[in-house]
Figure 1: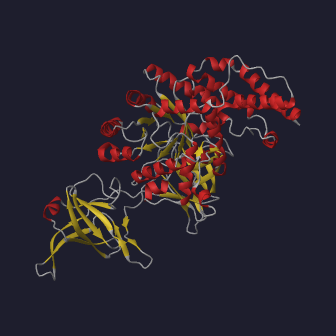
Figure 2 (figure 1 turned 60 degrees about the vertical axis):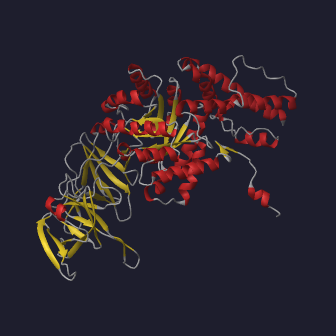
Length: 620
């Protein structure tokens, strides 16, 4: 048996060594600090071309390494196994290489060094970093940024698809001030927006706005609607309001000067029902009122400002005015399984399907596409997904200006498709450039202020080389490059992308699990993220675990059981990313606690066997 197992391992070892020799030209152009790691990556690629499951069982039966945790030092592991098998089978000792591979304990150290070079020193009590995506609030609130840093943020992520350079500058200034006060390190990642393939605008519907208080199961109001009253504004409605307010309306400026606590504004809403707003706070922005009833608002409603008589029994009307123009209501298109949707190249507002009196479709629903140049890359029978995978379909007809889609994935009663929703084309080889003109312009700011750059929509080694060329021209060769693996093509090209990134001194990978799930199928996501972790560990490159980590906690303030388990899985990576939300500080604190607890239990795939209290209690 020893001879058979030895021969199997020996053959694997030789094939891996031969594969490396065939790739010497690739190794020669890489940064010198990554060449040994690149060799290990090539060893791992060659190794994973084989099915070694039977061999693993045989090695385990002999009490030897089953090769299941050998990503970081695959050739050295095989050599160690061969040495032991050779003694058991009385074989001639294996000749050692003049250019040794990564040693058994060395891979972990190289990965730790590369992680430190990318993100800075590890925080006390954990080795996994925490990255936090900034909201616009981070530009105007130093206290918010300080709280994030104090709670455990190790890397600030700025998404260049939002805000502008002046806003980014204020975010960075707030971070630098907090760093100085707290004496804590924190790196900055700026994420390039990349090409945005999204749905176009939709024709506005009638201007009707509705508000509704929160009620319990018995219909009792548990939270009234909170309305901000202002004297002048560029908007009314809900856009841009703080989280504790629900609506904003404009009233005459003289009302704000005269208004008192407990005054009321009464009106008949669009359904001819009397409604009232009670003033309970006056503030710098205006006044805040609450309403305990559902109301439908349209422009021109007559508002009446009233106040109680001193007797407290009657009300008197102080003044009246008309509700100013409200913004058009945001529309959506209802699409159902089996129906057709037309994706158009023009910028005309889309519209729902036009139906006859019996509900039969006379004209299919249509909506525009922000990047119609992709139409030339699409083919019949390819899949298309909208709005983070909520709606899906199959392309049934392609022309230069219209794509006809048959919807095959939607809710049983139909799904609403809105404007500015993402479009994914997993089967298509899109010829869109990974760097847009805006990205190239943003690079000037990024090179001056960031430590790391997030590369969206990267698909080929050529894309990586293009970014490296721009960075070189701007003097940003030392900037850390983070490859965002978010498309099927990027995943299929992963080893090539890793080697291309290793031309730079600092590099890492982000697993963009949201887009990746849409591109490759939700049922395959767990498998794909494992493979990405394995190949990156073989390359000794840090990984960022991203998308919807503690999402419910961040947005709602309460965590789910499933997302706590998911966050703990982030221990397998070198960094975990949290998205923005009103409860982000609490989410950072929770994630910091989870990662510290898991640090003694898990490193990559390896379980750490520390003493367990549960075992110590047995028999007591």
